Image (cartoon, rainbow, N blue to C red; front, side, top):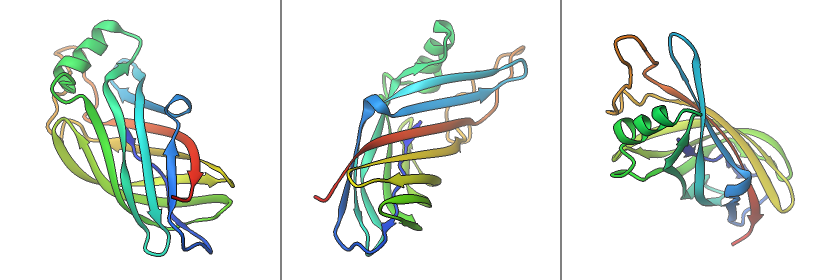
Length: 185
């Protein structure tokens, strides 16, 4: 869910100019893990697009990250159709989005940093406040980030696909590995 993501950006040390983070969907991955009593299901979603703008002095972060809800693949066509139609209802809710509003922490330029990104996670027609820990590495012209978090989908109003004989967890774990170009707008 991308989470979607969600992305990891913080205040740049010794910089007062805004910074733009453009995502590279082809080089970014959104993986999910859902546990059940017999085995663990692993799968992927596709990042549609993402771009963010950071105001380093205030920590304000604007923009959006969008994941294609219809792109979920777990290796089982039957399971994926059920996820698409009954859990995500992606015909009705085709996008999963994250709209960050601020970051906690500082990202070194260049360097590695740990930050927390706060914003609104939109899935299945509902908005949910979310703070995501993130590991960020910046370079002179590009960046990379990894995030790991849980989405309590059942608590957020989506159907749990459990059956009488197959019981799955009420939350799904998301791992986002994102990369892209870095620029000053």
